[in-house]
Image 1 (cartoon, rainbow, N blue to C red):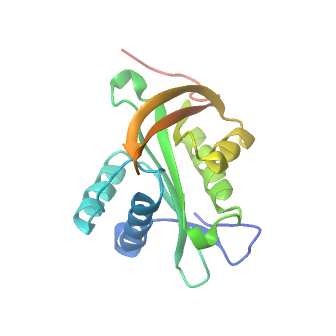
Image 2 (cartoon, one colour):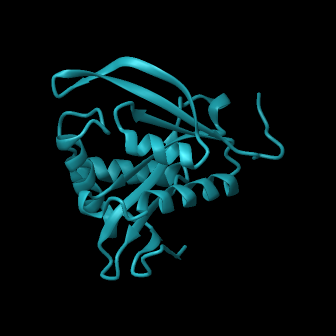
Length: 182
């Protein structure tokens, strides 16, 4: 899959472990160290990335990257299980990470639009965003893309010396046409 943004030098690619694990790991670890977008304390490892990519492959979860003309990863997005029970099989929780030096270039929007399209094609019904409630940029993007605020979980995390609230944002899709259950 290839797509271009308003910056024609940026394209979307399907990420793979060999080409992108180190860059994704760097984004994760920078986010852990510098923000409340991830509620982790300790840096992740390349061994973690091996398991992360294996889990994405096993569940057919996309990992989409925005890369520049040199193939450098600028941002990525993915989804995974949301409450891993059979009845939740049509609901996924997504995440988007953008390098600090690449913010405000439309990369997160481009990646989210691609995730939404892929969710429709994969017959998903709900995309869930669990966003640190202080992350006004991510909240604004989700609202612009049609996500609805469905709740806030107060003080469910503690990082950098203060309590963190998680805001839940949901996009309900018109798929699948014939859901199955039981």
